[in-house]
Image 1 (cartoon, helix red, strand yellow):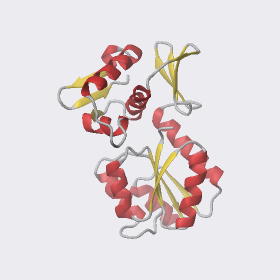
Image 2 (cartoon, one colour):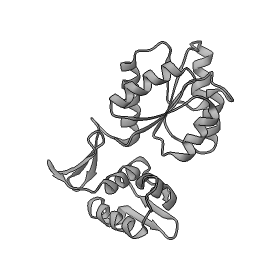
Image 3 (spheres, helix red, strand yellow):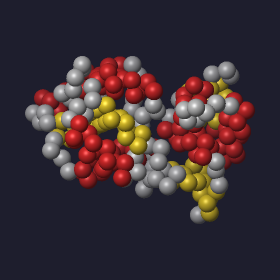
Image 4 (cartoon, one colour):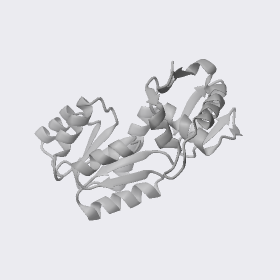
Length: 222
């Protein structure tokens, strides 16, 4: 599963509980316990959704998200907090959150809200993204199919396809692609990347993936 979640929660026990539950549900969770750690994780990892407590060390969750939004970060965010006054909820949405859930909460409710935001981001219904030309990609199972028949893709081709689907119409630099496709210790290959892009162009359409010379690629979604 390539849906990466940043979890900013300074209660270690609660953080571990949320992490175990979400990973059992198929997500990859990166726990952090203060705002500085959360910023490091955002810099190092490709994050698809943020779960943010408000009362955390170094910087409040409200100020943390507001700062990220001002920097252009549009990653969906849910506040998970014991603050439950109307003014607190208002401040959370003013900071740029997409949802707000009060503690204590049921883990299943959190999962429902997460899945709702993920589907909204990908434009998917029931975890399926329709790609056109009869192709569809399943975000949960990480498989490609055409008219009901499974289509074989290499692991890095699947990762690249997910990256394009996450950030339609956005420039994705070579650096970001290398970080997403190649694991620590592997040496990125520009030749291999070109091959993966050509494979996806045959699926999405040749004009749907633009080459930005010496910078990266852009998936053009109509």
